Amino acid sequence: MAKFQYNALKNNKEIIKGVVEAASPREAREKIRELGFIPTKVYMEELQQPSIETNLPYSGQYTDKKITFLSLKDKISFTSELEVMLSAGISILEALQTIEINAPSKKIKTVCANLQQKILSGMTFAQALTSLYGSVFGPVYISLVKAGEDAGELEETLRRMLVLLRNQDSIKGKIIRASIYPAVLILIMFGVLLLFSKFVFPAFYSVIQFNGGTIPLLSQILIDICLFFGNFWWLVIIVFCALCYCISSLFKNPVYKNKWDEFILTVPTVSEFIKYINLSNFIQVLQISYDAGLPILSGLELSGKTLGNLVMKKQAMNAASLAKNGKTLSEAFQITGLMPGELMTMVATGEKSGTLGKMLKDAANVINKKVDMALDAMLKLFEPTLIVIMGGFVLFIAMAFYQLYAGMLGTLF
Image 1 (cartoon, rainbow, N blue to C red):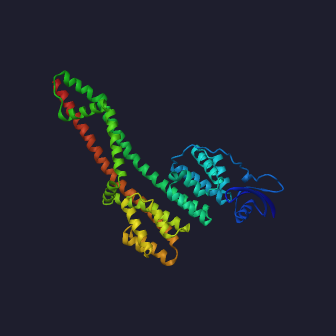
Image 2: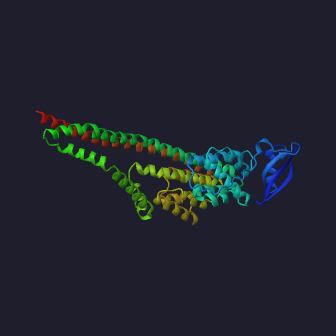
Image 3: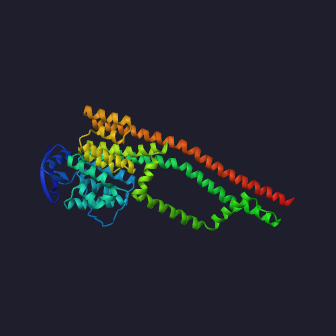
């Protein structure tokens, strides 16, 4: 057994020094925590210097720079590095110091520096997150962090959170990849229109006008459209931005948002995707909160915050109310209609067998597969529709070009 000297925080405020006997730096940290202190520096007494893993002086680079947004990739990176170091027995302060020093992102460096300052002032990690970055990380992330701290298993909670964040990133990536194909087709459509309007139609148009001919109807319509876009492109951009703003404002209105959410759940194929993508986050947060030791009612309320569809959010609130009044979780889901039948069976089995956490995890895996299937089905429906629209557009251009060509020939003979 070696002797380890340490510096630690007492009551999150006072810095104290002491000595403990342990077989390794990690065991020394555990003993310091058992004393009720937060270790900030641990080193062997005979070496009189910090061990390699802990020789990280606090930078003191506290900054008032406001961080109002972190990308999903940044959150995954921050959570992953923090989880790895906490699992290795490193204190939260040293972990934040390490991330601050090594993180490539300036935003993450700033976040870590500010969190250290708050923790040194007496706050817990969850309190520091709430105080500085409540809107950045969101209530779900912070509530789960608090539950993990209270249960003494913050690293395990962060590991579960990583599964949730990576799943969200995977779904986001799939949606972006699925949007590339239609975006390319639309760009090609506008490119063809621009090509014809700038180089093809003006040549034919000038010949017909020179010979005193008349422009065919379809050709005139297409030429007018091209001229309008060419001369008033700035107006088109303004109208498009105004339309996006109006739609965004409508969606912020609960009345219109609720009506839209009701409507979208009636659209075949699309409704399945909307349901499953909402349930994916809901089930995973419910499983994480349950494993973190939160009461089932708190878990329901927390997971309900992840639902973007107001109709489904109302169903989750009703399920929480029913559970509060004595209904089991599976009964509450069945009455409200929030869950598909196969998932309710899994939840009911978990409740009866005492393996609810495992069953919720299995249900989350099932939902993720359903998301993939629903996305594939939506793409299979969307691609032919887009091809038909593109075909109609190309046909319109071809007919207008044919009429213009025939009209030009008619003026020459």
